[in-house]
Image (tube, rainbow, N blue to C red; front, side, top):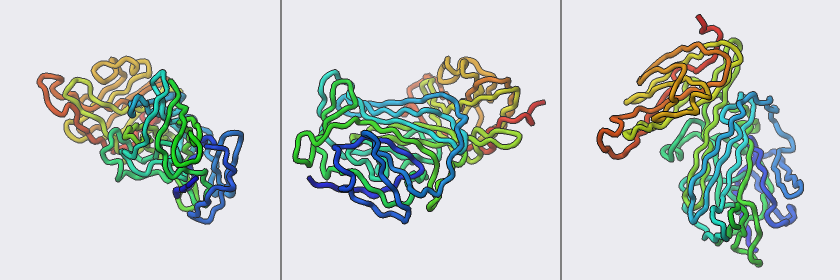
Length: 376
């Protein structure tokens, strides 16, 4: 059997995958990318990569909401690429976990030929690249809701200094034979047996911070995008917000954050939503500047936001109206809320315009902050 290894290093991310074929790890190929020593721990059928001498501070427990966000898209040949996050908001120093994988939507065996049609290059499932999986991910600083700009976006450094001991990687995968209504598949390729092995086509990861040299640092407050893609060209984008708590207030969206929303000609504009909680009567304030044609900012309760009319909550606590630039302050009582920034509805179907959507960039000019200081 022929093997290859791909450079990469585990770090701010803790990943759990399954052993591929039971091969003893002493046959793995070490990758030297630094001076820190890493060990490969094998627990049952799981493989985890951790530093033996981590130069990191253990993150504090998260006070995030319990919301779970999920997304999926058709991949190819009746496969569905899925991405599920355990939360959309996390306190600085906390962690975000997510699961991604490929699912066969057929109730019959589904043989899919391998491809190399990645929409985004450089995706992987850990320090060794995608290994034998047909999918991978990366984490970007900033908010993105399309493939535009992803290649030049700032990446979160998930992997610290090596070396790493990678599992055996096939030099060639020819096809994946998925079981009915399952993410389990037989992997066929450059090996002496058929199939080479059988594997669950999913992986779970935990993002704990960003590596800077030999130190793992908490993610700065702001919005982050998880990019998940597969070798057949499917692409998913998930988002989470890191918020900081300061004396006298809580920042839920940092100044300098850039987000993009879709303005629309079909009465259903795109939006960016940020859930948050407050335990007492307080004030939410902040500021933004948007490109033409502008955006509308809503503050709504979670219950209000669950009923949507033409792309925005059917009722709300506060609304800016369509604005290119605004600073706002709104008093709210204890409860669970959503900040909802929506693109403009242009003409609302009065006539057909192509394309139906256009991206509008929004810059957060003043941090969105919960503070008692803003109360009258």
